[in-house]
Length: 187
Image (cartoon, rainbow, N blue to C red):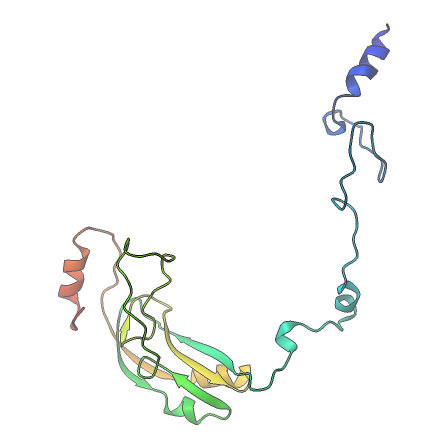
């Protein structure tokens, strides 16, 4: 046996990516390799040509009878209470069907304490159940209108005044006692 025949026998079992300068040619199956279906093969998508031409319809473009669009008004403070809430201008805006706040939102059952019951963590948050704000960006109003533009415009007309409370920035064990002393309302 020559050195070259030994090298050929050994290199037959080494993957091509480990030997510099040796890459399999496109579409050619090497000995010992199994071509696996669609992996790496070009596939044409059913809607590919429509998307390239700009003729494809997306779900947001499909109009349905009676469909309303929503815009959410978020809190701008981390913690506190809604002192004043004026939705009259938003309710009078064209195309608006409903402005929902803590005053007219459906009542949900009280959230369970951590470790009680099942469910995903954070799935029972008390959103729009009372005038309290629990975190920055919490939903404080939802506007439903005939078009998304009308809903966005009306959401900008909702006027909110807050009584801010100090934000909780640590996770000390005595935080609940301190929260109750900061809050001018009952927890």
